[in-house]
Amino acid sequence: MKTLLLSGLAGLSLCLAAGTAAAADLTIYSGRGEAFVAPVIEMFETESGLDVEVRYAGTAELAALLQEEGAKSPADLFWAQDGGALGATDKLFAKMPAHVGQNQPEHFKSADGKWIGTSARARVIVHSPERAPADTLPKSVLGLTDAAWKGRVGWAPSNGSFQSFVTALRVKEGEEAAKAWVDGMVANGAKAYRNNVALVQAIADGEIDAALTNNYYLGRFKGRDDKFPVEQRFFADGDIGNLLNVAGVGILETSDSKEAAERFAAFLLTPAVQQYFTSSGNEYPVIKGVIPNATLASVATVETAAPNVPLDQLSDLPGTLELLRSANLL
Image (cartoon, rainbow, N blue to C red; front, side):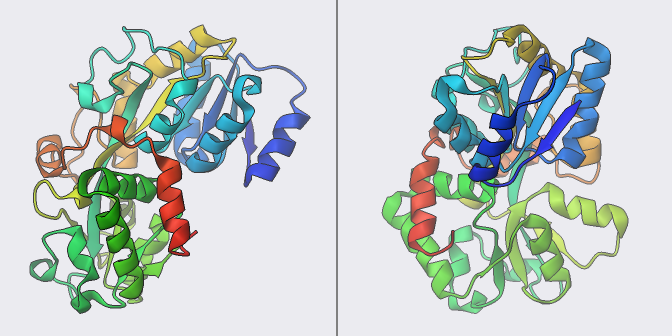
């Protein structure tokens, strides 16, 4: 497996122009972290006999790069961190073969058959059980703009999953309400952190009392220290703060290796890989028959808590980025 770890569009363009000494059988643009997904890709190489080149960067960066490259992109497959980025690049994807994803629920894949979810995650509020007990948490994410939470809440505006949440907020509550919430959080002293790991650690360190993140980060801390002083909860059932999202893949229409890309997409939905995603990554499987992770709320609980926002509606990433920039968050 060839790996290029990239940062920023300028760096991406330079690295892509440089090329590699030998063409790979499959080129993946991965917005998923190398430490987590490299073992899966290596397993695929072993089982398929194919050589895979992986180019890592942030999901939003890669989505923008694919738009910029167009038909000249060397990518065969885009593995995105969230459904919003997949929706934003949907028009660049070929139709996913019907047999790929046939065993997963419809809400984990695109309605037009252009991409499939590979694992699911829920948005949650993580909090200090001492400084922000569960019974003091707001029923809705919208309540975090209240004065009681001034200077106590953290968020990660540059994170792709957070941006998908804001897109969902725009879809469900409307543009004015979304802008009012973002501006209200800023006015209430919400503290920005570089990523979700930093958010969880900041609560343990006493810098903030609560934060908005994905469900799987806390489990990684608890796996190393079961007394780690942070807990997590959902807001009230149906609240937009409980957005259920997916990581997923789409195959580029311009790919010369569609068969290999289809094999990889199907591989990600095999029971062994789905078990890895939930057991090692604390994410939710997107097929049935996978042994549940005992540290997670059940899939049924998550689906009940989640708002009714189809992931296909989260495609306006540019609009969300503009909103966050207008609030000086990016």
